[in-house]
Length: 347
Ligand SMILES: Cc1ncc(COP(=O)(O)O)c(C=O)c1O
Image (tube, rainbow, N blue to C red; front, side, top):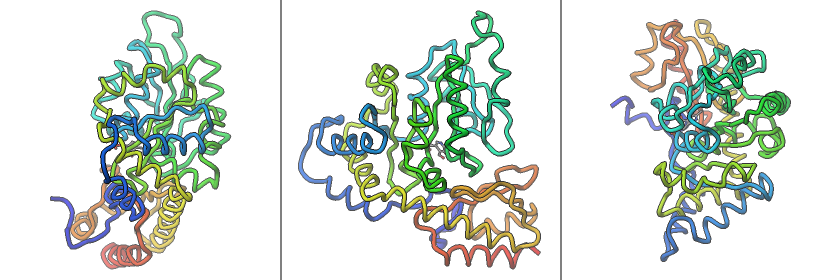
């Protein structure tokens, strides 16, 4: 077992956090009586209405169990097997989904090396040769992660530029929004302002990293893309029978801006963590801290010592770059204790 059970909160992942009390209350409240299974229930209706309120009345939303499923099935809805999906080399779909996007969509992933996890037109445009040529896969989707896997955030203008480029070239813009809440909080924007209004076509909307127990949503902003999605979701094994328990969580997350408050807190804790780490001479922050992740080079010989008390991931073994994530329940005291240990150890 990797974690030390005496350590109540670590910095390994926002997935390691528990469930926000208001979400837990919503689950308990939903646990009354019987409702029709598979989503034909009042909880799902209410949650879907909340999504339409955030993103616009034409939004079509489908709840699924997890983020890999949301990405893979959303991409499946937009592609044929001879298509290609362009993404950053650091993208979750490229490195952390065990080849599921390739297996399920049949598409080739064309990955782009990026220093900060972000795609730009310059980085993707060379994939557009061979369009219409039957010997080449046909680029169909640009997939961005917002926030990125490196903790950076695309501005609304950067997204608009990418979506315009995608649409001009008969492609779609997909967004892996496992941390969309952190991005919106970071930019101080509404959810629609950094998705549908910037030209995003399909969004994976994250729940688990922001206080939910489980559950993510595939959000379509163009109904022509979602017309067969109910079959794709079922065939893709992501139709939850007891849907109400995902819906009730989303309903709570989208009530009174709980999503934003959780994300703002996590982001603020990441800023604090970064500020504290900057005062440790042998630790070097490597990425802009724009959401709830801090990337830092910690000299390799100290890493196992720190990991005995706090499990965290080494992102790049060659450079000893480590990833520290904060979450909705991280406290200032957690950070003081963690950085205190780093200060004592890394000398
Ligand atoms: C950027 C990103 N996308 C998607 C996911 C969803 O993954 P899972 O299938 O574990 O819910 C994660 C989880 O770590 C992630 O970091």
